[in-house]
Amino acid sequence: MYLDCIWRMRRIATAIAFSLLAATSCAQKPYFPGRWDEWETRTAEQAGFDTARLDEAIAFAMGAASRESRDLEKVIGEAFAIEPFNTIIGPTRPRGDASGMIIRGGYIVAEWGDTTRADMTFSVTKSYLSTLAGLALGDGLIENLSDPVAKYIQDGKFESDHNASITWMHLLQQTSDWSGELWDKPDWCDRPEGKDPEQWSRRELHAPGTHFKYNDVRVNLLAFCLTHVFRQPLPVVLRERIMDPIGASATWRWNGYENSWIELDGLKIQSVSGGGHWGGGMMISTRDHARFGYLFLRNGNWNGRQLLPEGWVDSIIEPAEANPEYGFMWWLNPGRQKFAEAPESCFYAAGFGGNYIFVDRENDLLIVLRWTPDLAGVVRHVYAALEPVEPSRR
Image (cartoon, rainbow, N blue to C red; front, side):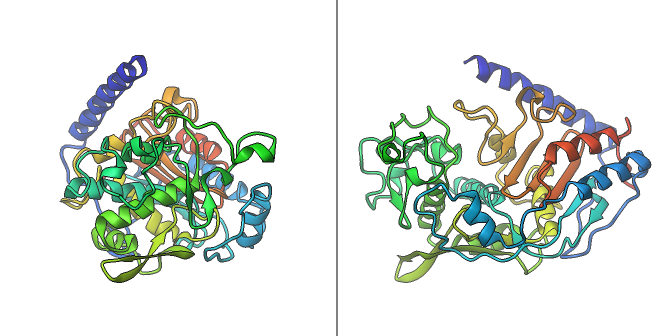
């Protein structure tokens, strides 16, 4: 109750800040980029940055690039070597160089590296996945996020006493503690808890909603359930409802596993994965990430067209009771503990290897990083470059 009250107060303060920002911009229509590479730029000074300090921030970001192997299949295997059932069953591809973008007021202020190359993005995919839950809710395909998923999926995955009470909210906040197996991966094999491998499969079950556990098996379960709700492949829904309307390129791909094919209404459909833990997930460019992030910076509206349900962007930053740093598959900044320089209202998508989409609606700021693990360091330098003026919309 205490955390809920505090968060409500923060949301009120944030709403006031957004209102003031809108008023000071003289109600001018925000800029939106055209299709693909049609995206205007502004100088650091025009966007409200100190030029020299922004150059320092870019230099810091470039110097913080990942030094891990470009062979991502090898990197995945080494990173999760302790886990059982660690066979890679989805596609991978070698990564490119580090890249990034800084956008303010809708305009590109800084850009480095190859921002058009489509690379694996690992758990940033989760934020795309949760977006589809928002679309399903807005369409009425899901009546309420507090509904038990068993009301919609009746193939046995939610029949047990433990799983029957799991809601869509639990899946979105990674607090479901769903118990079972999907695509030959048991739930307990992902980041297994405890020092004794013999105990991993006999882990303690927690009541849904009471325990946060970052777990790709359960994220993939959400993708499976949403596929059943939409009755079509999730990449098709994402392309038609989000990626094409925001002018994304045709280079992104959302992959599943070699064994994640299902049959719906007589059609064979691949259920996609919510990350690249065992391969798969989204392969996407920095620029397409930036378009996706910019949609959230604009509260789900793209050039006058409301692509996301009204209020959905506020919903995704409601903190899970079991983990106040996590919303609907977006990470949060409660108490400004992660980013002291940024407002509490900022949020970000994060993926293995240094892949990030950082959104700050109060400062009209978007940062996208690829293969740059030190997000906090980059954020610190970027905010040090911000001048105490509103970005130019000229």
